[in-house]
Image (tube, rainbow, N blue to C red):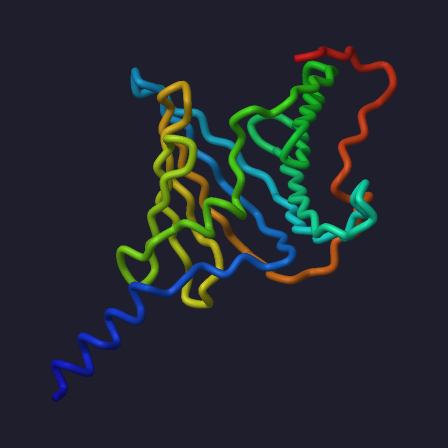
Length: 188
């Protein structure tokens, strides 16, 4: 009987889903390792907000629309801000005094990745999204702790989150990237 209960508990735990909050703030450290073994370490903070909006359709009905907003504030080894709404990516490099704007065609959609993630242990989940495999680890509070993947340039990426705070109040203005007017603008 104890074995049956243990197997049931394990099956339930492995079928659990990751719950992504409406918002979070966190500090992060990011390690990027290229094919030759060269390592770059970054540190900073992240703001995340998942917004649901109701938009009117041309037919006169309403449709729910979801927007996921991220702002990555890199503080080391260089100071930069990266903002995205899932469609456009803005990178402000304060050291180079330039702003780059890109349209995203294969970006990381955390909401979709989390939706399809499958438990492989009690705290580890695996997901394949747009041909990229992600390993997601949760902490004891079932909050994001680590994401590991290989990007499209074959770099191994590991992001570790610290001081995670779920469902915090985040103003939309704090998710914007605002560059000084004298910075050069690069269209990507």
